[in-house]
Length: 115
Image 1 (cartoon, rainbow, N blue to C red):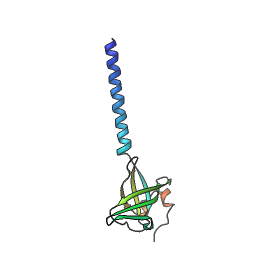
Image 2 (cartoon, one colour):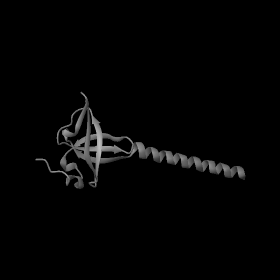
Image 3 (cartoon, helix red, strand yellow):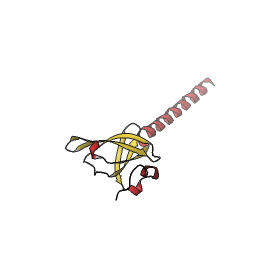
Image 4 (cartoon, rainbow, N blue to C red):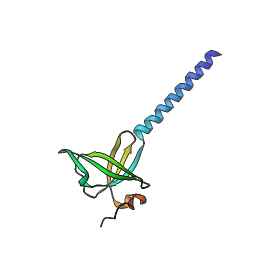
């Protein structure tokens, strides 16, 4: 009977450990949040001929503000709107240019519509 109880505790411990590993992995390396920003080339630092570092104000889909730093392999188009994929540990993992009308409403209210 003691042997069965100890095996049950070991199995439960393994299940809990595996579950925590899966949740941790997804949280740290898979789940992304989207933030939106507008390119301001006055805020760019050229690190090399093919590497640029941006430090821009960005907003989540609800309009919450944050400062994000990311790198690009080229100088981005001035005043372009970007959607940034942000991971918990890695920071900005990807970016893509979007149109003003693709921004969430709470983010649009932070910017003026381009002509």
